[in-house]
Amino acid sequence: MKERPVNLTPKEIKDLHDSRFNVLRMVIKPQPGLYFGDIQTGYYHPTIVDKSGEEDAGDEIFGAYSGDGEWGCKCPYGQIGDRLRAGNVLLEIEDIGAKLYGSRWYWMMEVKRIEQAIKAEETP
Image (tube, rainbow, N blue to C red; front, side, top):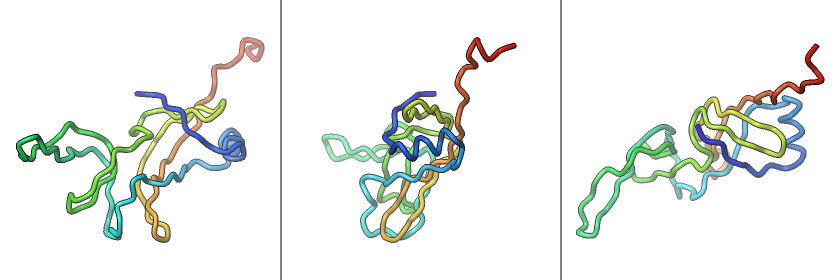
């Protein structure tokens, strides 16, 4: 499990702190071009081409990839179970998917807010 910082607007941070929403939508970079098929998310082995032109399976990574294997992108926010820090809010990723809105693909991350440690003065 890793913890990564994520850039959000002050309004988004406040809404997360108040538990008003639980899904973050972030643009996938780079976009899969004009691919409008089904983009899947999960663990996969990207193809690596060595100096002699031989293709081989690379190390396993978590990300989004096309069903035909022509396009793939590592998720910059981590994987399920990793944590994101936005301001003073700590989030845990519960699920990650990819969704097409208009002509752009987005990471759809279902997150839950992790409560901060209870302060000593709040305990009876």
